[in-house]
Each structure stands twice: as structure tokens, then as C-alpha cells.
Length: 116
Length: 116
Picture 1 (cartoon, helix red, strand yellow):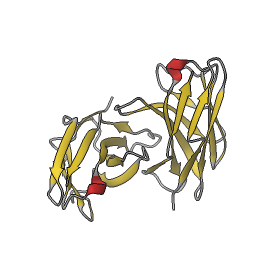
Picture 2 (cartoon, one colour):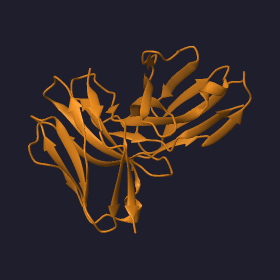
Picture 3 (spheres, one colour):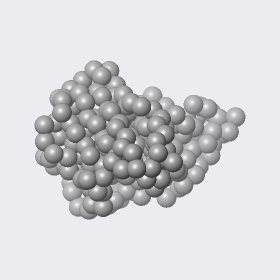
Picture 4 (tube, helix red, strand yellow):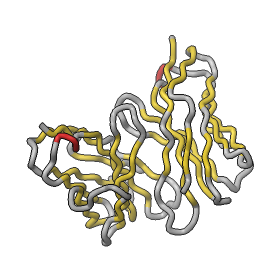
């Protein structure tokens, strides 16, 4: 149980285009989902916290107009990187917190974004 | 704000031996969770072990155990009988138990190599 999927696993896009990444909790309801960014050989950096049905809370320094987050249902959150540039190339990871659980986040397998 | 520090960027151990990964944290809170996550080459984050601060007993999960020293704000991970599959990045993480607190604070990570 407690499986989180991400799609796509890898995406390559041209500079200036937008890319959408999906995060799904497959076998549980997630009231809260989190989006992280991870640079090579570094730790996870929290970008935003997404609660179902409400606006995401962004961490300091993260552009909310650049990284659009939607959490429309208890099993799906999306991250859209708008007008992507090469510096947005990174590994993006989502996690979900189970509705009836208070302490454990389950992570998706990540999405590698490459912007040319 | 809480911080988590992993002072060992890299560690190596001989297969079947025991290794201890260090983690210290800084907080003014009295109630919180501590976690160890493993990130193998696949990049999938996997929960290894969890400790609740109000519990004095150290958490154990098969070959994995922690040494939780609340006064010293130390939370080390011991891996016994190391196996090749244990090779990964290991991240220590903190989460407050205050109502509404949701995000994990990660350490910088320790890369563990298992020598056959």
C-alpha cells in the first residue's frame, strides 16, 4: 500500500514551452501533497505544499507563477513548469501524506526534466 | 527554524559489517518526528525508519536501528549486516508534531557505499 506515482518519468522540452508533471496517490487519499526539487548530489528542496481544494503554499524563493500547482482531487496533484528554461532542468519529486495518517510522507519515483 | 545536519557526506562499509550514519538536528520544540529515508540509484525515496520524540525507546526495523538521544538532539542510524542493496543516499529528516505542521526538513544526505 501507500504507492505514489509520477508521470512522466522523463521529459525533454524546448526552452519557452510549458511542461506538466502529474503526481497520483494510487491506493490512498492524500489531503496533502508536496513538491520537491533535487539537484545532482544534493538534498531535496521543498518547493510547495499542496492541500486538496485550496491554493498551494510556496516556499520562499519559489516563483508561484513559474511553478503552477493544482491539487484538484484527493489523489492527484500537478506541477506545471511554465515557460521552461535550461535552469529549470532538474529532478522533481512529489510526495503525499495519507489522509488518515499524521506523520508519514510517501514519495513518487521522480521526474527528470531537461530543458534544451 | 529547524535544521538537520548530516556531517558525513560519504561513508563506506564492508559487506556484512555494521555502519552508523550520524544526524543532528536543532529545534526548540519538544514533540516531533524523526525519519531516515533511503534514496537508491533509482532515485525513489524509501522510508527506512521513523522515531517519535516522545518515545524513549529506540526504533528498530529488522537490520536498521536508531540511537535517539533527545537531549543531545542526535539521531543516528545503525545498519547491521550490511548488504549490497543498502548502497544509497541516506537522508535524515525532521517534522514537527504541531497541528498544521506538515513539511519535512531534510539533512544534506550521506552516500553509503557497500564494499563486497
